[in-house]
Amino acid sequence: MLERLTLTEMSRRIRERELDARELLAAHLRRIDEVNPQVNAFVRVLKEHDFDSLPQGPLHGVPVTIKDGFDVEGLPTLAGSRFRESHVAACDAPSVARLRQAGAVLLGKTNVPELLSSYETDNFVTGRTNNPANLECTPGGSSGGEAAAIASYCSPGGIGSDGGGSIRVPAHFCGIAGFKPTHRIISGRGQFPGAVPPVGMMASPGPMARNVADVRLLFDVLRGVDAFDSMSTALPETQFPAKVRIGVLRQFYGVPVHPAIAGAVEKAASALSKLGFEVVEFSLQGQERAPNVWAFFFGELAAFNTRGYLAGREADAHWTLTENLREAPAPDAVALLAQFAERERLRSSMLRQMEDVPFLLMPPGSIPAFRHRERRWSIGEKKVSLFPAMALVTMWNLFGFPALAMPASKTAEGLPAGVQIVGRPFSDRHVLEIGERLERAGL
Figure 1 (cartoon, one colour):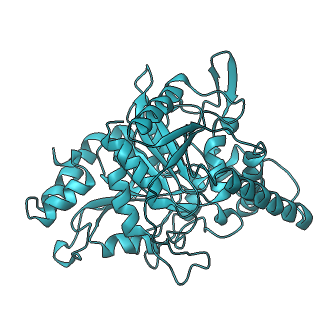
Figure 2: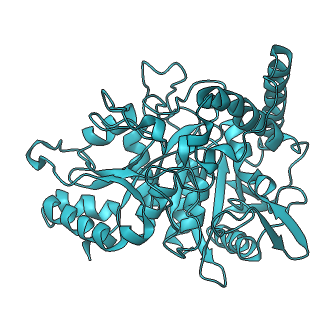
Figure 3: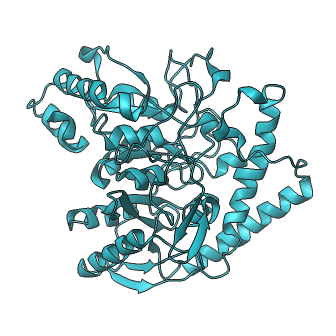
């Protein structure tokens, strides 16, 4: 079945005239008709395309999907909110424009929680997205629709965004690969909510696909300096090191990890060792507050801004948006500066800790996909809630380090269990290279 080919293979076959792009699109549209009524991954499906005008780029004729937080010219960017139903984008987001310039066919826009605010994908406009591995479970959020579309073979790949694990958590939950690059290697313009500081200094667009090789292809298309994005930066050209040391970080301090995810990390560590990497144990030093500092910017400060956005119309907001909107006074300038200073202290400390161990292997969170609206779980004799369960995800948003989630195993119930690879800033290609080598080794 054509829709089950890798994105890279689709590109090769079209380029070598072994496959017609119209035929490939038709196969995906049939799959969407078959699967999407149960999964509900799509906000909008785009069926009509001018194939004669497609650029001859690396994605020529390949269908891709777009998370519905990115602008696509002529379409609404709903961001899961009924307050956005009258919106129409005037132009493509730079990341969408890069996909088009590479010859990609925009297959559709995928579902998100309202204002991209939750690890569950549900809203009042297009409803709840379900995990293809188990419809009673969430695919994660906020790029949950994108992950579900890719995992169910409705799309070979596309673009999401990650401010607190919003690419990596859905990738882990759905059994696909997702990459959060070094901050602003990919332009952050053309999104809603806008990727502006201080929250925007932690959020990054990134590619998602069923395997790391496809993620890498998309990353090479998406990355590049945007002259109109004040935080945009180039990725330096560097050689893969002759000797690579990888630290295994098994958990965030005392936060327990589901046995299947711990097993996936162990499996990946063993595979890396057999591939010739120097694999060593690694523990965090002095990073206990990193998730809390992330939560200040992405939780407390964002909640204050959201309350202002909703003022007078709170009853029309979805529970995924309002469940964390605590009533609290606005942070004053002193508190804001103190949190910025703490972020820099923690980031500098992490850079020092990773000087001799520049890559880390770890869980992409403590739990697999959970049932809709669950918020507490038992792991062994310990209880864990959502915030600490995501500590090994959110801290890399705080620091802006590149982080890759990739599939590795399954739980006894058949849910995906992934691993996460993290590198120092601007080591994006090397993180992806490690992931590809693991993939080729059969992880």
